[in-house]
Length: 113
Image (cartoon, rainbow, N blue to C red; front, top):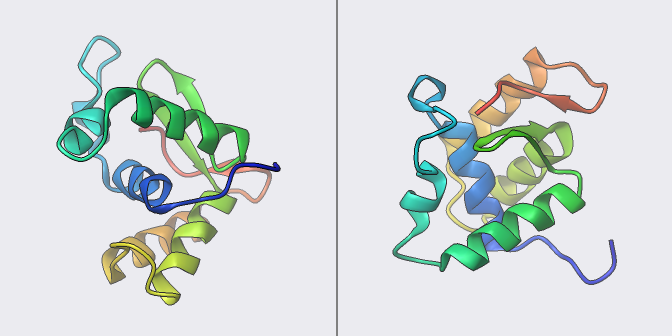
């Protein structure tokens, strides 16, 4: 989409979703993604970036605090790892590869966070 490009904050949100512990999520709980980035970005910026990830097709909101990462989102994380962009480490790259291997190629894959 014109006007929106992926940046470090987008990558950090994808990384956090990829590594989030699913069992700790409840619809009525505070958003742990926001809490983990609270010292770095404003709440408004966080939700704007999440919305942009949805527009780009890299993330899909399943319910209030639960998201799916698309295959494209996993590939963006892998690209960032190989290009040494942001704080994408080997564990994140391996988790993205495992999610791609285990998912379906029909759009969104991986678990719900």
